[in-house]
Image 1 (cartoon, rainbow, N blue to C red):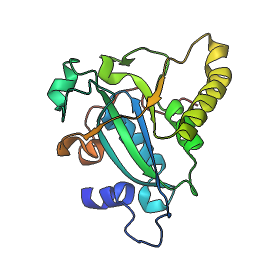
Image 2 (image 1 turned 120 degrees about the horizontal axis):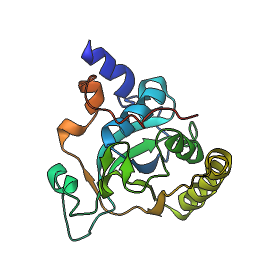
Image 3 (image 1 turned 90 degrees about the vertical axis):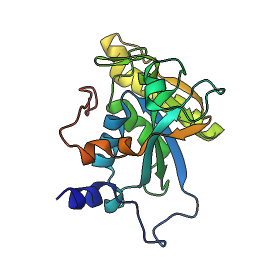
Image 4 (image 1 turned 180 degrees about the vertical axis):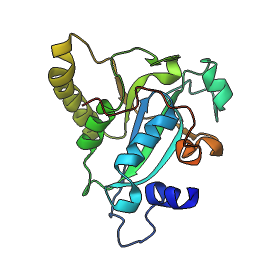
Length: 194
C-alpha cells in the first residue's frame, strides 16, 4: 500500500518527453519541512503532471562557514539554516507566481521564526529566489497576498525574500517523511488557509 501511495504522490516523472527544456527551481521555507513537502506534493503530485517534477527537503540560508549541516545541528539554531523545500517544476504547467501564492496559502507568514508550536530560526518563513525574475515575482505576489488576505485582518507578512545560497539535502529519512510515516508529526499551520 505504501509503495502505491508513494508512487501516486511522489514519483518523479520518468518519461523524458514530459520534461521541459528548462525546468526551474523554487525554494521555500515555511516551518517543518515535512509538512511543507507533504502539502505541495498532495496538491501538485508529479504523477499527475501538475507541474512539480521533483522535490527535496534540506537546509539553506545559514552561516556559509557551516558546511553539510545535520538536522541536529540545525535544530539547535546555531547555524541559522532554515528547513526548506526545493521544488523542480515545469513553468509551462505551473508558474512560479502560482507556487509562491500556494506557499502563502499553506502556512502562517506573519510569525517571526515560528510555525505553530515550532519556534526557532529554522522554522522561519522565507522565499529563496534563483533569479532576478523570481525575486520580482515573489515581491509582487507578496504584495498582492498581503493586500488581499492579511491587511484586512491587521496582520503583516514577515516572510524573507532573499537570493538562494548553498543548499544541503536533509538526511534520507526526512525525504517524503509524511508519505512514509502518515501518522507522523505535522505542524497544524500546514493546511490551505484560503
